[in-house]
Length: 157
Image (cartoon, rainbow, N blue to C red; front, side, top):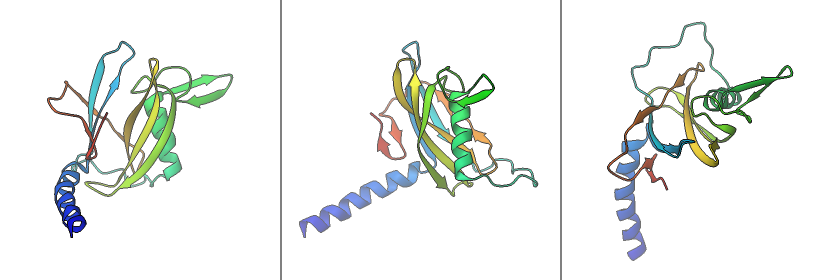
């Protein structure tokens, strides 16, 4: 009886929190100069549609696009490395790896890509939102939050 009541209580508390944050990820990265930069990644419902001749990309292509955008491209000796040893891309990151790719259906279909890479001397987690046609939704930078950071309903440490 006690376990059942506890489960119902936990469900009632957690579900509204998760629903309120399903389309938004807030996170921070420590820049090379030691300053924390806070980001909010949210896919707006009113995005302009893709061009009619643009096809949908695969999940593998999503990962490649996200890493190239987050960590940049480095070309040496005729080879192109994505998110490699030279800092670049949106986060000025190196050695970028994809942790997960999650398909989201709302507010518009997109892929949420969780990555990690080195920014300065610290390996950190950061995100990209890639639309089905390959476009990136840029996270918005904001000033330090008044409350704890949340990531899709979970505390960010």
